[in-house]
Image (cartoon, rainbow, N blue to C red; front, side):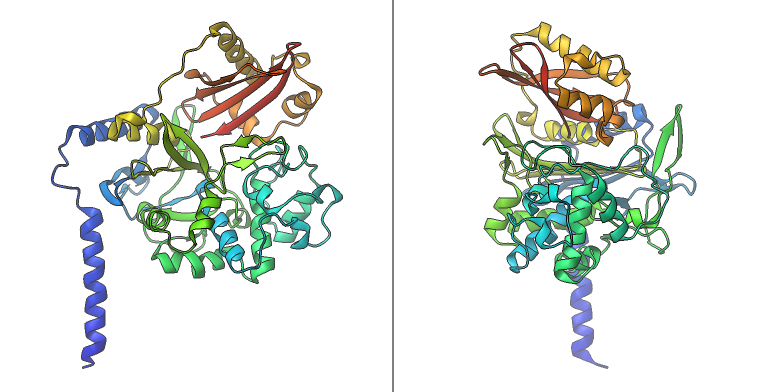
Length: 469
């Protein structure tokens, strides 16, 4: 018998048991009122929205206050959600793509402010000023999947890049912020061209294995994957299986990963302890992007970077194929909320924020005084008319007429289907200069978003931007 080999195996096994003992046992004070409130809140929301299953991790100082599965990972087979249950990442996967880019930056193979034409062959003239940083921050002018895009067709990377190249830019690079999956698909292609590896293989080698994220991987419906959850949608009040998309569209860098709560706990630990990257690189990822006019927009590299009552709030959500995901970090309070659900028709941001507010009441946003309630009512009505298709296009600038009426992006088309607005609250107001700008927190049952509206002195709407939270 090889004693040394057996000893190493025993120590590895003991280490696994020690880790599980830490993450699977709720602390002795689990009957604390706030933890019971979280439990009741999650169960109430699941009942209200008919959510089949939720996986939740609440971390404080890097240790779990709560690590729990609720409901069913698979309705047909009556399989419960566990901490090991694997969900689809949706756009939470974008922060892993940005990590891959930053690793290549530290390798000296990518430069953030280099034009992407250096890394791609024969790019359109309109891309001449698009940089890697622009793609990471959704400020490159790239559009998104069109309404007639065929999600059931298999595409090669060359096919997708050709489609992206043929799609006109929505605005000049750096001019403003607009969420773009195409930008992150392109980053995945750049990662392959620069590293010689498919982005998923790169992540396995440089991120997942070093961090011990043993169940993290690119989506594959063909492979046998233990603890995989099923995704669902609600149609006319009934829960149905998710819509099918082609395998190639479940393997792109805009958010096509399998992750569990345990995986994201290790991901959170990497950020908290500065693993994988140096301090300057992490600072870049969480820095608000600066636009051409010098103003900052609260988005970094795959992370939304904001604050609530003076406390930093760094977060991102995801939605894809009947799954929702969310990670919210509050570095000043050393709190992280990790949430997965297997129903398209729910708002993970609202649930995650609600949990954070219960754990730490100071994280509950304080509404600002609204000195112009008539303006707020007017803009709420305007959004309702836009989504109903009854708004007067002449109220908007020519550029916005094109974006909202002639060539609406995929996000706006999705918002049109969300139904009744639940909350419409002013969070920011700037009435100086030639454009008066207002930011509103808008909640629907299935999504929370920030809406920024700007109106010039003649009453014309010249700014209209939506950011999903």
